[in-house]
Image 1 (cartoon, rainbow, N blue to C red):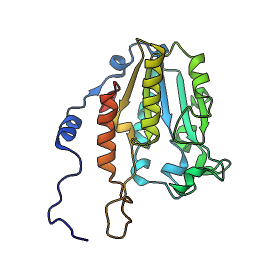
Image 2 (cartoon, helix red, strand yellow):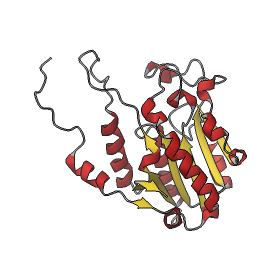
Image 3 (cartoon, rainbow, N blue to C red):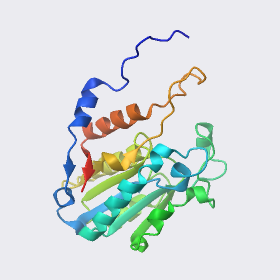
Image 4 (cartoon, one colour):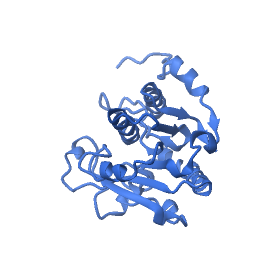
Length: 234
């Protein structure tokens, strides 16, 4: 295989420039009414942060910023939290694309302990899912319909280009379809990320997954679809 002597950066320059403009915002600004704000988490489970074939140190690094945001939100008065969690059947066809992971009944499918030990963890709604999507064959939409007073959705978790993308886009697209004029979806970039598989001659074509590229391009894609992306919420 012929290698380029000086490979250009993967992320388009205009995306990089946009990423550099993302602001740090106060929670009072993005969620002026805590009672109508919810935090929605994708896959902050052991199987993506700590153990198993898809665990990633890069994803595990979300732990501290996520804990800071959860604690800040609770102190501010946010009381609605939904945790979408991979809980797969043994024979899931998804395992043709990814190694078997987060199988129901294993520790991989469980919330990371730092989140589970939070003193307000009894306020968390856990929704188990058997695919990348939050609402396909799950209870997610029913739970949402019971909480229609929520009009600000803060999305956190992993992976930016996979489950976070599906979660945030579902929130945005369903709100659009229902005509929810005051519904906003916000993503703090420091509380989402994706895994990294560097390009290598040992990989089959399509096997690389450059983390920075997919993280930044999908944040840009989400922003292009009416989702507000900020650097952090403080």
